[in-house]
Amino acid sequence: MSEALKGDYQICEEIGRGRFGTVFRCFSPSSGDFYACKSIDKRLLSDAIDRECLEKEAKLMQAVSGNPNVLQIYEVYEDEDSLHMVLELCSSPDLFDRISKRVFSETEAAAVMSALMEAVAHCHRRGVAHRDIKPDNVLFDDRNRLKLADFGSADFFGDGRPLRGIVGTPYYVAPEVIAGRDYNEKVDVWSAGVILYIMLAGIPPFYGDSAAEIFEAVLRGNLRFPTRLFHSISPTAKDLIRRMLCKDVSRRFSAEQVLRHPWITSGGTVESPIDLP
Ligand SMILES: Nc1ncnc2c1ncn2[C@@H]1O[C@H](COP(=O)(O)OP(=O)(O)OP(=O)(O)O)[C@@H](O)[C@H]1O
Image 1 (tube, rainbow, N blue to C red):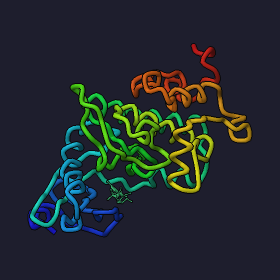
Image 2: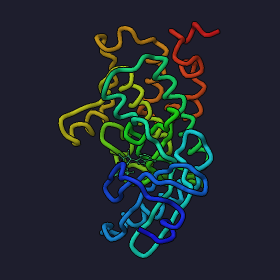
Image 3: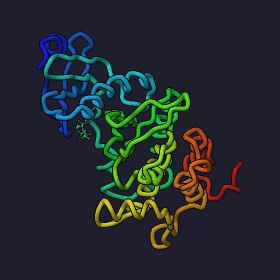
């Protein structure tokens, strides 16, 4: 543990573990607040790509800081062996835990989707694509405010620079990523669309028994709304899902367009687009 970090924070118990890092709760005597400290042992990063991703993660988080729905980074400490990021603490169950327990009502799902898309739209305005939007990366603080986290797969885009590389998580990854083509920030809208579908239906829209089978299902992109799961879901919610899970990227909604959709602006209460006030 870096001496400079220990000088500024009291490190408390471990609260999580990822591939490269361990997350601790920590306390700042100067502010009187608790934070999360994500510590990465650089010696565990065997290849240059992993090392580059790590260095980039802190930079990307700094680039998107300042939005209430994006996990805030406060401090970075680096020494020869490790890198520590002091982050906003999220002590409530994450979205993965929540969707594993039950399906959401339309109003609950709209509240989550609205906050998530505020975060995504903010990142896109700052020229950052998250590229790994999934329920495990959607955290909640102790006041239940949504925080988009884990920028370990994110990248900068813009100035005509396309995004490349297969990143993401099978159920949530957009078809153009799997196809190996250049892509843009709308891959995040696709992933958020998968989350919306799961919140309302309890199962993913494209599935299979292995990563390869899931990829094939995503590439086919055959979006269905089985009656047994969707009989009580409004046409407006389905309309938004169709616009987010649209294979044609040029027709797929942007994050800003999602935020303006009637289902979002009405908080999930508009039954059909023509019911609009
Ligand atoms: N700011 C935070 N507040 C509370 N818990 C957190 C915070 N950030 C991460 N965690 C928890 O710590 C665990 C590890 O997080 P971390 O970001 O290191 O890895 P990961 O995203 O789970 O996996 P990987 O980096 O391997 O893809 C996760 O379970 C996560 O829920």
